[in-house]
Amino acid sequence: MQKFWAAVAVTAAMVAAPAARSETLADALISAYKTSHLLDKNQAVLRAADEDAAVALAQLRPVITFATQASWTKLDYAFSTDRFGTTGPFYTASTDASAQLTATFLIYAGGRGKMAVDVARESVLSTREALVNVEQQVLLAAVSAYVDMRLQAEIVALRESNVRLISQELQAAKDRFDVGEVTLTDVSLAEARRAAAQSGLAAAQGALEVARERYKAAIGHYPGKLAGLPKLPFAAKSEDAARAIAVRNHPVIKQAGHEVKISDIRVKIAEAAFLPTVSSSLSVSEDWLSGSGNTVAGIKFSDTIYQGGERSALYRKALAGKEASAAAQLQAVVDVSEGVGQAWSNVMVQQASIQAGGLQVTAAQKAFDGVREEATLGARTTLDVLNAEQELLTARATKLQAEASRYVGVYQLLSTMGQLTAEQLNLGITTYDPEAYYNAVKKAPLTSTRGKKLDKILEKIGN
Image (cartoon, rainbow, N blue to C red; front, side, top):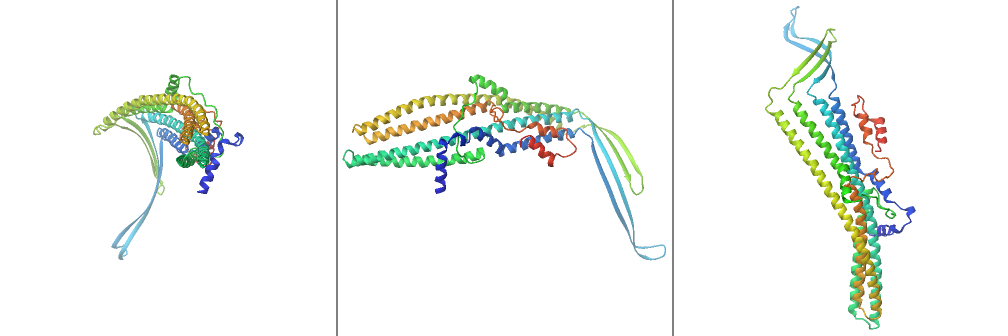
């Protein structure tokens, strides 16, 4: 428990630390980007999609296979008689060795191979947009964790001040009781309020510790001394402008657009399945023992006469998939537009709450000062003072929470607009380059990109 409260005490003091020795929000966002396992996972998923594009391209190329075969054969002749009249078990043995080189090439399949490459390419682009959306989630979580860490530290400081103030009121009530100005009831009321304040402080300290763990999960390390919050980035002039930007740029909508293109191509592939296929082959073989060999070249034309209705079913399935992806794209626009509206409304509500909260704090402070002064003159009771102090505490806490919510709300708005990326925030770091790995493998090179070559590529793309 001592370690726990020591950690809480250190964290609670961080908001007052000099900015030069503090971690800024930009520092936290950079750390979150660099240490996110979620980003690592989805970057690897994207590289796998890049390899699918290479696989699709490889299907258009000839397939060359090589096979060798060697055998030894033993033939037993049980209890046979040889030419000398000897009877007994005899056997003969023979060996054989051969090699064969075969090349096959698909000449025509209704364009299915080329369309498969197009599907793979669109899948890569779709996966890239999914990665951008994950990046937004990671950065938004980092902003929320940073702001919440500062908020909880400020709440702890507020609660500590509350405990000190109520302790002073309790002592004043005891002093007044000693001279007969108040009753024991007033002292008991003050004691009850101090116990409640201490309970509230303990809860705030617990919430601060929870915020520390959340900070570590989102940003990659425990918080030290945090700098003040920087000026909020500009989002949009109006809700309509924000919505227009979102519809054009949000990765979810872009991803849905690529999925529509994929479904369109898959319908064409299903149509091409009704067409015949033409392939060629060349086979060269040689018997190494006899020295004989042969070469066979051929061309094959094939078509399916009857397949139990499978091709028709696959075509109808492709059409249904096209309709589903088109509807999903429309729904993505609806969802993103709704998210912008909610985020914009939340920012406006919190802005109004901050303004009202400022007035409330000012009024509550004046009321508390007046009630406490009147209590010294006997015009107010201890309960009046404690109630006024509680209202002041609530007003201050509410204003702090509104300020934190508004700050995170602006970044939430940027996220709904598709603008919350490391590049858009100008973090000044090397970000993941999705083109680098794709360009290295898109032509399906014969050699692997493992080892030092792959390390260089991953280093270049910022992994």
